[in-house]
Amino acid sequence: MHKRLFIPGPVEVSEDVLQKMATPQIGHRSKEASALQRSISDKMRKVFNTKEEILLSTSSGSGLMEGAVRSCTAKRAAVFSVGAFGKRWFEMCTANGVPADKFDSEWGQPTTPQMLEEALSTGKYDLITITMNETSTGLMNNMEALSSIYKKYPEVIVCVDSVSNAAGTVIKVDEWGIDICITSTQKCLGLPAGMAICTFSKKAVERAKQVTNRGVYFDLLGLYDYIQKKDYQYPSTPSLSHMFALDYQLDKILEEGLENRYSRHIACAEIVRAWARKNFEIFPDEKFMSNTLTCVKNTREIDISDLNKKLGEKNIVISNGYGKLKDKTFRIAHMAETTTQEITNLLEIINEILMLK
Ligand SMILES: *Cc1c(COP(=O)(O)O)cnc(C)c1O
Image 1 (cartoon, rainbow, N blue to C red):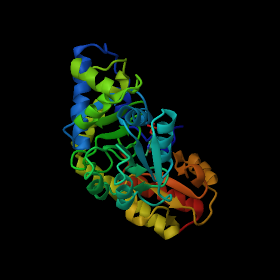
Image 2 (cartoon, rainbow, N blue to C red):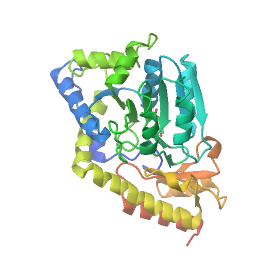
Image 3 (spheres, rainbow, N blue to C red):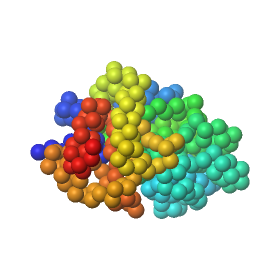
Image 4 (cartoon, rainbow, N blue to C red):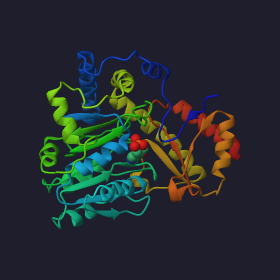
């Protein structure tokens, strides 16, 4: 029996989208493949609010995160970390020999404009990474406020992890001056895992040209050059199954309307937040709550794995805390196609199990 996923990726995928994954294969050097990949890129530009190039990668989002810091750091990277995924980006830097420093916020607290200003004013850095929506803590950074600082430093390449919020909450790549904005298919886009997508600005292209050891598979300049020359085809064989499903799902997303989609995510978030405040507490600073998942502080010290076991009997699953927050928090994702009705039903079931009113 299938369990309905309320975890922050992979998410529940609609039956019609799943069916698209079973489309018969086409040659990856065919005109149809070019048209398919161009179509996806055009639609993703709308999601990201950008005129810049889109790169598609047959990998999860981590691949493009690694590719971004390796392809575009000429001098030194400043990694602003608000949880587990910022930490991972720093590890990618060191493992690839990319000089980097990490600027940590306490878990549940955002990256602040002051932190950016202090780091960037040293002149040491030519690339920064920011986690827009941190899935381990349920926190969303204020990109508008952060952009007002880093825009004063035009030599800096801005990389943003929007893996768990793209297509779930508004992202203004061009207005916010983001050079590389990354997401994966298995979160708010509502598809199976296995593909990642990023924006790639002209500024990032110019920078990557100055970097020598960019690797091969995740060399973002290599991908960029190839799709310019080969009409949106990629150097290696992509997951065409994902492409079929993504192109179809993007039509559905644009048909729903991005604004409507974002409002639905917020409506779901507000239901979970009200419930969490009544019965528990919200983990992150309330000024920076994520719209796509809620991280709840386990103030009642409930046994989270036992709760999930009982939810499992009803074919539902939520998420425990991430890493060091494993038993201290639990997380309810309200991503992709999740409706307010589904969220209300979920919380009623949790209330019954925990005997809450
Ligand atoms: C899921 C997630 C990632 C990792 O993405 P993969 O597609 O699993 O590689 C990175 N950052 C954030 C914020 C995430 O939620």
